[in-house]
Amino acid sequence: MNLVYWIGHRLFREVSRGFFGLSVVGRENLGFEGPALIASNHVSYLDPPFIGAAFDEDIYFLARKTLFRFPWSNWLLTRWQSIPVDRDKPDPSSIKTIFKRLKEGKKVIIFPEGTRSPDGSLQPGEPGVGMIIARAQVPVIPIRIIGAHEALPRDKKLPQPARITVAVGKPWIFRASDFADVSKEQLYQHISDEVMRRIGELHE
Image (cartoon, rainbow, N blue to C red; front, side, top):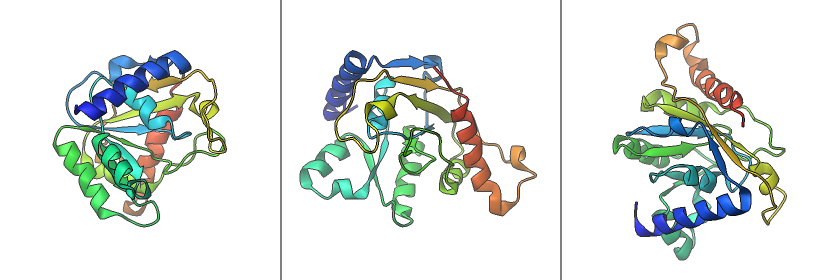
């Protein structure tokens, strides 16, 4: 954990606990070594730091490529271990970076829904996430952020008082045999659907 990440991690952990009463349900599911994909619902810009605050180890985040266009933001996001992603078109370099970090034994957050939910409800997962899971062959940790939509929904610029819970499910490992009756064309979507189902089962 580099110094800039450590400072941000400690600062946001204290803020999230003090201002948002952050609690973690299923913390025992976080405590294992090695690579993993952290699959979470997405309702707010606050989701990545809330998830990061729940982990004791450093993790990697995905961030819009446009956020890296300024020298200061590029410097900060790089040290906060953010991977630039182009949401408007396929970005092989981002996927390669995700796999590289996983091979290094790191954990990477992905949002199967692709973008923030407009109303806080779960949205359908995207097949691209299913492809990453199928190829990565690492555990998937389902996570549900509860309360972040109330804290900072899409139509607000400043955070509002809210109580935040990070609910963590048991790690799940994709096995092709579990999807033997699914056509090749639909496989990735079915994997993404399964992850969203597991996220949907989590609660406070």
